Length: 256
Length: 244
Ligand SMILES: Nc1ncnc2c1ncn2[C@@H]1O[C@H](COP(=O)(O)OP(=O)(O)OP(=O)(O)O)[C@@H](O)[C@H]1O
Ligand SMILES: [Mg+2]
Image (cartoon, rainbow over all chains, first blue to last red; front, side):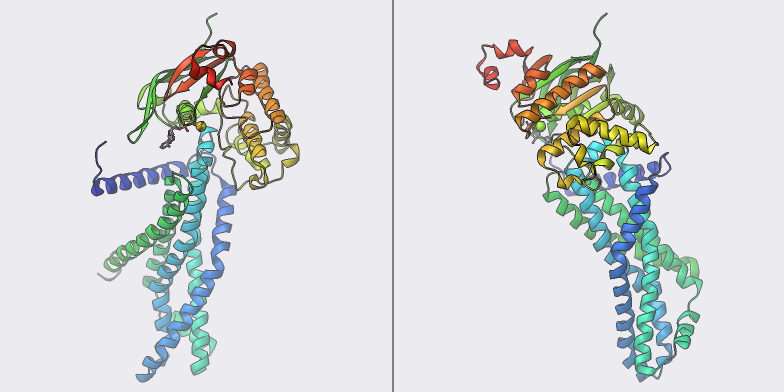
């Protein structure tokens, strides 16, 4: 048995992921798309995360506002707070924080669910019966994540603005109308579009890594925990990497 | 008319890492025949039938089902083959997130492509009655006892009326009465639909009822083969030990 070098193992892992990605794309357009399961996943993913996403967004807005008030006040620039909050939340903080939270919540639960199906031979059973487990389990979950994570992020951004407005109004008595005018006036497509596109990739990464780790679990119940755990870690790392790439690409497309 | 061999295995070898599990396993099953495999725990019985279903691929040797080498099949061919094979997992492998009804409907909708709700329902009830589980149709697998899960797994395997059925310990964990009923059900499937089967079991009464041919496995290969009476009266100590 040849000893496998760490580099070799990494290559094998990359090859496995590439193979998994290929089988996902091959199965998207196959006949017999699992609509029922797809809608069930949309619901499960959205419903499971909406509470925590709303809370996170809201607190994010409040905290960001309260933190900025003293320093903005020193320069007499409180009027810029709504714009500052909305740009920073919508462009960067919102998508990344929500994606990281969803990595913890959704990637782990997909990893654990599919992992336990894999170790209890349920995935083998589907395959042996002639059904298509990739189509039923993987395609539906990845697509549902790719759709729901952007929507959850938009919702969280909205909640952040609400939080920011309340914090602002409490300290300076700004009107709702004025706040939202200032917060939205400053945004242009260059802020919104890359941020939105980014969340689509985040959603894809979360679903993909969750499914991949779940399917790769083999070897007893302990590997279910490992699958869930490494789904969170890997998805989080991917989110950071995708963020960095998209900032670069976005900047060079928009501002050069 | 020459009997058709539906499964033909020659010199099968399979290792996991540096652990050799199958070491020159050979067997064949004729059409309409029940082959019972006996053997100690961990000798590779489950691995053998997983190879037959294409879930595992052998390292060496040939494995033909319906005359075609499974190893060389592409995805479509493998899928077509699997439509003709039923597999009862040792662990039952029920879909945890679905009710008993949904578990049964799953292959009916996706493999048999049935659309009619009433027809699906009728088939579910028919097969549940056969395994004595008609009351459990709305339960979740987690609410079933070990023996019920096993029978449920059997129901899901039988519902598509496959031509070859691979039973991995169909009666383990069942009481003697249910166990005999399941054995009779296996026999009934064979008689009614001319199914061929490989039955892995440690339950000698099941073996006695179902077997046309018995095979004893040890350390990854076949060490004895014959009908039930021949092996029961064998002079070999090791083979004798299974029949006591
Ligand atoms: N996927 C796998 N990866 C690594 N080793 C495996 C795998 N599947 C089986 N084995 C090993 O192969 C050997 C034979 O396993 P198998 O499940 O075929 O035994 P068995 O004859 O069915 O035993 P039992 O009667 O207990 O079910 C075992 O030692 C097991 O550890
Ligand atoms: Mg076994």
